[in-house]
Length: 197
Image (cartoon, rainbow, N blue to C red; front, side):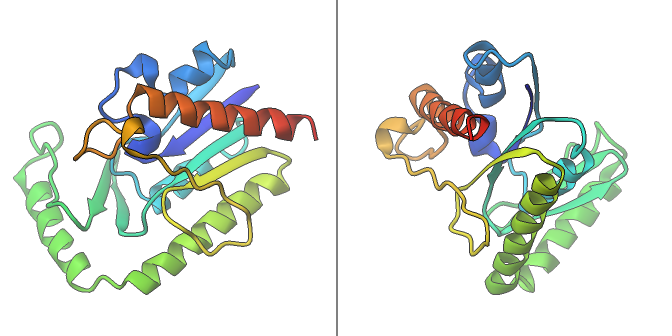
């Protein structure tokens, strides 16, 4: 089966060697030949929905790890601009264009979070999650959605909860190898259940 994976750093496996990432586990342990992992650190629900929508025809299974509502996404040409409320915006402008991009994004970040409203973005994320799942199901796809933040959606989501033994460290809540393997096992089991229905 062809598998598409998307999500933020918790799905990506930030801090882990890539052989322990979700995408690699679906290839090496799950034995799925075609796996596309579009997750990345700092990715927002709008970016997850955007990339999933653009790949809605190409895969059989969609494993979607939705994230926190306080992340905002813009695209400028080929550059993904991921905004997060708790950190200042940073872009390697030498890699892309020039300092104008970095300055514009820094100023935009300040303005976005000056006007940020939790209730609005929570609702927007709920809409994006439900719409994305609905679209995929309407095309006969298998969808395994989970979320790191409680959502108010029509579709049932899995909510992974991991204690300190599954985290990289006391101060870093990203999953360690044990945590990522547990999440993979949980999602692989969900996939087997859905395939047998």
